[in-house]
Length: 344
Image (cartoon, rainbow, N blue to C red):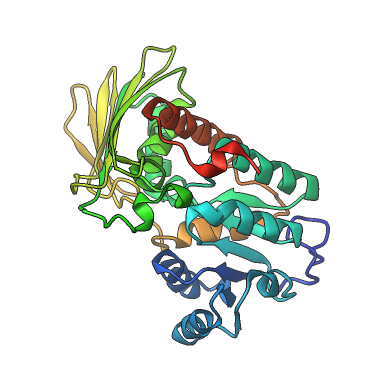
């Protein structure tokens, strides 16, 4: 199967039914993705790249990866790589994903997709111009339990959605020189953590028509403790929080006119939820799957590439752009600005 015309990139032939991954960066999220992918039968990591050659080689040795590169360009030029997973800090997502697309590679880019909507639109435009696959690594959308939740909501199991509540907070404090407090690195709770509650609410309700927000800001000017109130013309609302100074329950609740759905701790990667239908006993809902964690998003990429698709129906680019617009609007209301917001 030739890859040059169907969104795989221009790297020649793809192994039958196997997605060959190149991983950019060697941090914790890259390690978790690699570990999950290496356990799949139809995918394997064949290359890793870091701006530090020693780090790349250490990572490659740890996960038995054949090729290690001390720069991104080497990986992007590797004909053995079908798809690139971008796991850099999000301040580098635009550069890494853009360079991979320029090299003709399919791309799965970690969340938040970019620092702002302008950067996100640039990547989407580039992918569409090159007829290449591009997807945000929003693993929540690929989780089978969340997919079942969406089906039930759309089938009217709890009536009309009236509210969504979700939170994601972690225990600090973070030192002043930590990336989470650095505006140049896209620091703050919103992009690192708040992207999950926002994405979850918009998965169910779409892009909001009204946005309010408040936050405590750090001395560096990034958000430390953030609350958001989103509103829709239907009358639905979402109350969302994220923070860097206290571990929250990381739970979510979807309330409808005829019922409610409660997601447990770790709502962004659940293995079950509780469905409360009006007048009925509560039901624990699970979805059977042989996969776990990041395997779901990797499998979705593999399925799209095998079918010659350049976009995922589970994580559509229009939805990614809509979430970025909301994050931009929240930051504007908070007065959180990054140097990259001014453009090139």
